[in-house]
Image 1 (cartoon, rainbow, N blue to C red):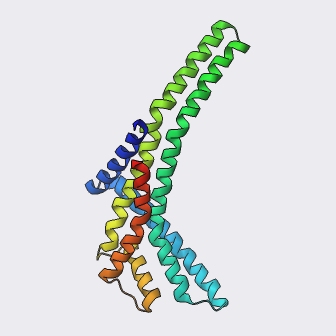
Image 2: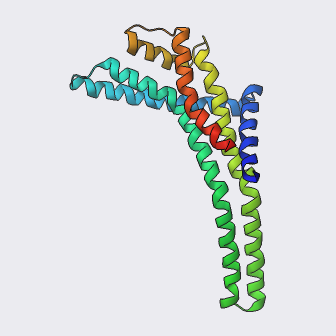
Image 3: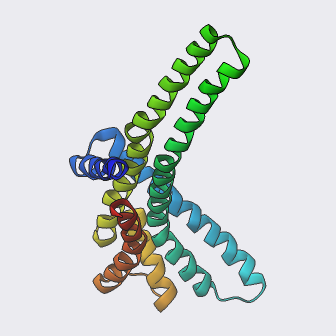
Length: 205
């Protein structure tokens, strides 16, 4: 629970930042999410041109690209949470290595120098144990929460945005006409929520 609390606090902070609309941080999350989707769409356009040469349907490639674009922000958040969890698990190993390094000094150095080395090793171990949560894991979790809070509501928005454009592209692929009906927005939202839900489970588990 001690490690998990930093993940929970980080996600809560990210959502609070998005809801509070802090000028820099919320904008950064939107930019990150939109950039990832634009990269997917650019890749989709390249695939469309390459597939056209081989006779593959443009609608199939467009639909696949739109689907990936919907999932990318959630997968990004999921990877951030996974990294945060890994750092929390590795901190014990890193701290232990620092202590072992400090103790090993007694085998190679004089007692005075070795004691200084041990103190430094213990200090580094303590820093690894107690600072990894607030300085590494929590910011990663906050960014994941920020992306979710910025991205998901826009799938149901009527305002112009990259998420809405992705829904329109999906409708184009399915029905050969542009559009963003409510039912398709809801479907896109359900799909987009899946990786976020897995990330949330990782935070609480």
